[in-house]
Length: 57
View 1 (cartoon, one colour):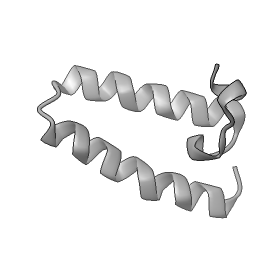
View 2: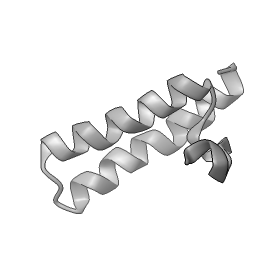
View 3: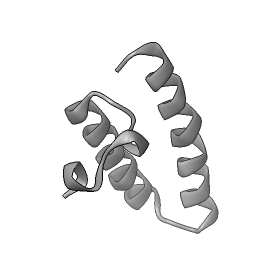
View 4: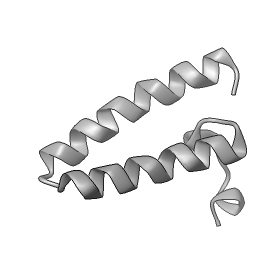
C-alpha cells in the first residue's frame, strides 16, 4: 500500500472503530471486525474501499 492509500485507509479506519463503539458493540466484536478489515487490506495491499466486488467475494 502506498502512502496515499495508507492515509486513506487510516482516514476511514478510525471512524469505523468509533462508530462500532457508539453502536454499543462489545470490545471483542470491535476487535474482530477491525482485524478483518486489517487482514483484507494487508492481503490485497490496498485500502478496502478500493476493492472490487469480485475481490471481496
